[in-house]
Image 1 (tube, one colour):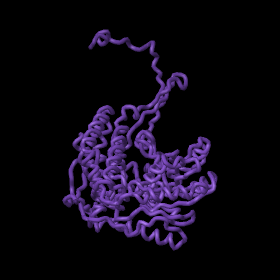
Image 2 (tube, one colour):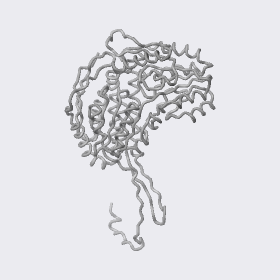
Image 3 (cartoon, one colour):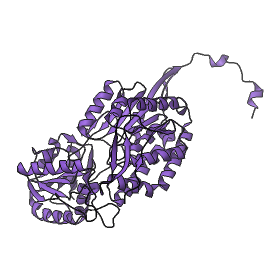
Image 4 (cartoon, one colour):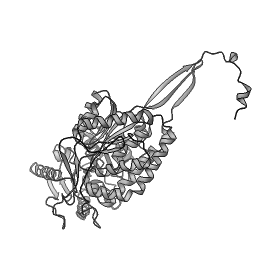
Length: 501
């Protein structure tokens, strides 16, 4: 059942205020099609107000002692943890994930905050004494100012929490959630206030590309973190860096899973299915293309298709559901068109999820898992779809498999299933991607490891998360010093001062 419809507001300088832009966007439940919130669009003036509030708050926030900032983050972690079930159900409501998937997202989200809490360690500088005669050199980490965080729809809790690294380092932020899934972020900003972040440190602005463009060009925004499709990531990166700002723009993916002749299918099959179709394949780490050694292709595919066909489509809050809806009606139509185009282009339809229905939810955005036999050169194989349309092809050996992986214009993730150590090591070395899985189809790094891809999957110099995030949100100021006073001639210390408590 849908939540009561709400009209959402911006959070600027500690106050919830109505956006002043023209028009609004309906937020719908993907499983029911029902409207659950109204998202008014923000104007340029709204963005300017949020940046001004963040800029003003920065002047004081940057001087707050690092242990104090860490303590506030620890409190934030606690209030988020206490609200885990509430937030997980909001995620199901607005995103369509199963409840188990939403709870899993919250677990990872809390780990982000845990690492951000470690600023007492990660903000340390370094010093080298006597690099020259009487000369010392050191660097100190300094925050930079106001950062923007632009989040996608597919992880409405995890990605917005990139802001915790920024504020932990002493910056202030303006967060823009996805228009499709803003409710989780709105609630997390409410909880940030409860945790004790001062007014203006964490600001939220609702809206569309108008907000992103204004944040990218605003003179008081020093950097922008973005996660989304590759085409938009490139535009955001080019625009933001064109204004002389820092930018990390994580794009899309077309990940390959390689099944070799030594893979232990009984152990690997659940992992392969989960990687390819978990979160309804709406995640950048999802396995998109299954590349199977020809010698084991037929028996493997028989078992793979049988396992995929057993997934249960439905509302994420319903018991035993293992596959939720896609995010929107327009996404559903795009997937169906891509399948039709692939079929006309020679792809084989091994499992067809078009026309899927779920009893009791006639207006949901339903697509069953779809598996196509396809090959490089076909759009369905080469381009990101971000939905439960997966491809499979046969290859002769490791060399051909690696050629397929490296021919992709994306470079996010690749995985191999093998019990041969030499094969795994060769794949790890030669795969031109940012993350590699060995018998792990979704090698998503935990919070204290950085994440990012290559080629069209990532634009920037610093990956997201972990110590890379600290590098992105701070600058290393180098200080070289020497002193010319003759210490033997300095005035003696007053004995009364030495005896002072």
